[in-house]
Length: 300
Ligand code: HMG
Ligand code: MG
Image (cartoon, rainbow, N blue to C red; front, side, top):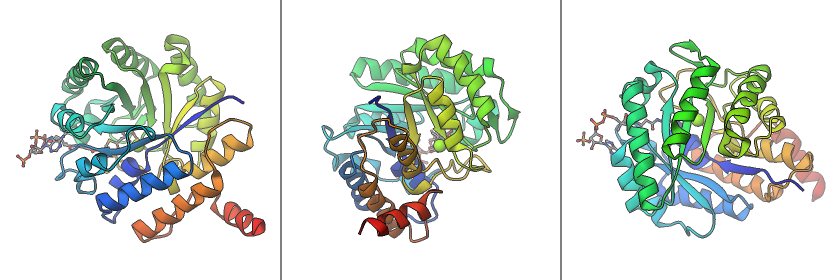
């Protein structure tokens, strides 16, 4: 069976944007439940300003509680300060956040596009020196909520820049869920032919119910690593119009059903969905939840 890596970004993308503040202890409980379901790649937290994103405060406490051997844990870092904090907390993998447009970088991390490129390159270089794996988000890869459509050649150029700088992977992100499968086919075909599939992963938000279709399209282009968020939570607080990420349970249902090896037990993953709902105290779950709940009842 062909392997597909499912990287759960729920503890970061999911919880950063929720109205409920979840304690570091409970964020660790969520991570442990994902581990129990077989998830082996998890974005555990972000080291960002607690004033900008209060829900991600105390990321060091989350990292301190993780068994680094249990999975590939990554930390999102927006600047060198965040990088140093992540390193001190024991992160072995970091993801920098480069957005494709001037305005999105300013709104998200208060830096111009040029400043962001230079900071991202500096972090990548430092991570390589420290033996930490650097990856790079490429946000608003199809459409920016402030500047509109983004040209494919811009994404190719920025991807080339980050890969040349030493990033091990570019995470191509549809931040506001604006992409459709035809656009994804065109963009990912171009990126795979330029850089090869193993250096690219997909991060689709599900605002318009197209995240699974977009994922399948990227899969057809050869991509074998996707971000998803447990229970479908998520969104960047600085990107108006962003709603939840592709739900991990929807992605795993599709991949397992289609004969890919994710290593994830869907029944156990439903416990993580349930725990997520308890932690954020409102109804959660991907688009397949009604079916999955019925299936579980029939199994009992
Ligand atoms: P700034 O105000 O320009 O920064 O914010 P500053 O350097 O002037 O510092 C301001 C204060 O923050 C200072 O503290 C710093 O020490 C502190 P004070 O002196 O006021 O007490 N500070 C930090 N504290 C902790 N960790 C840090 C850090 N840096 C400075 N790393 C800054 C600039 C980048 C800090 C801020 O804008 C920020 O934290 N932004 C984060 C935004 C964010 O988390 N966005 C969501 C993640 S991106 C996303 O969701 C998209 C993604 O999912 C992909 C997709 O879907 O597209 C990844
Ligand atoms: Mg996101």
